[in-house]
Length: 258
Image (cartoon, rainbow, N blue to C red; front, top):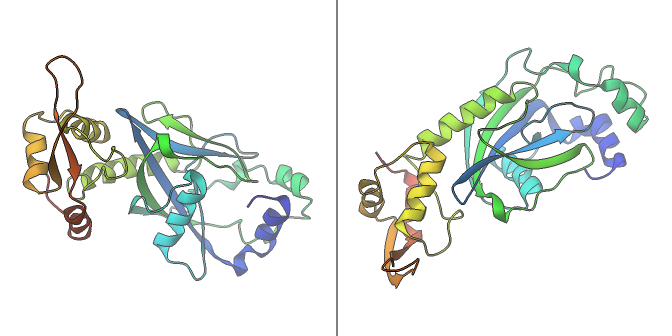
């Protein structure tokens, strides 16, 4: 929603186009240069930050809704994307913290009473992983800011989004042992040290520097290239790339990395 007119139509008629009381919330993790960040948005007239998300169109699959919301914020499509949990506690959204009067003043709407938005809402959580240096962050009429935050230094979050972030982190780290990652977060050619650093950063713990790369090679996810990278005197590590056919198969069937 880029204009006030679109927002007004959403408030008054959104239930005709979207499924009422069911939303998507997306924990979008960003990695770059051994840093792990989380994408957050700040809505107008709401004090704290929150995860990006939105409603599901009536003729839309859940996964498509999540992809749409992520692309709207990052400018990137087809990220690694997984559902992690559904949130539906009765008091998860506290409408008394929402400045309904201010929104009425801003939009000229007559009243919120009986509106389709003011009711208990269930949210389906998805997480995604991307290279945050390649994103083009975008706001809209109802959001005043969209920014990356260090995962260990997040601002206060609205609603139950603290719980969402913790659940998303937990699930993402479990999934790292069962799905390949890195295709969109590393250069086309990389060293074993670079993919080792990627996994360590996302998992938040140290991995055996000698055994971990061997496991990826044993799964045939990586191809050793006849090229080296010169990074200093007497230091020229071999370069590797992903075997895209094996990578796609592992995404489809899963793997065991332990």
